[in-house]
Image (cartoon, rainbow, N blue to C red; front, side):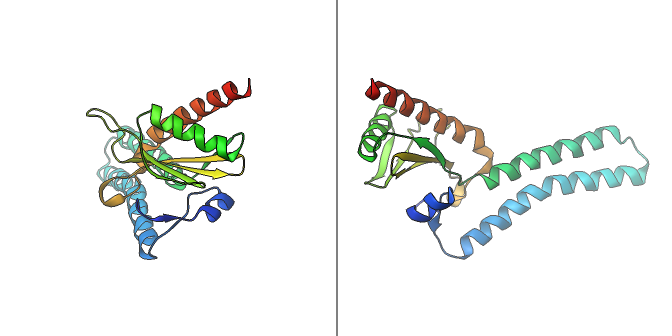
Length: 186
């Protein structure tokens, strides 16, 4: 999925990162996500039923079930927002391209693709950095900039476990972008 062709027009219209893939890839991804999300509460519920049958203490098992349901709710939210694009108001398309390229250079990101509609960069992955496998996609839409950060795991599987790190990277880029816009408007 990391090397797929991004459909820029569809992405702008839907507000989600859309790419051309084989039909089997999204199906397999949803099977993996569903198994991941529903396995935790299912195993906790089975443990609860086993405790009920043995007439054992239900306090810890019930707390475990509640914790896994909350955890899986967060995972579901994360999976549903993996491809969400964050819209940031900019100035002009040319200036937005210049500013984002400059910010990516200052942050030490490796720019994979750059043109008039799109910038794809890999944040630097230092030895103890958590940026290994991350990819930042920046789409230019008229005066706005659309940003998405995604962590790709083994076999280019988009990981829902890195939601906080992805949002932190997006927030870092947005803050620097807004600071540079304020500097140019003075």
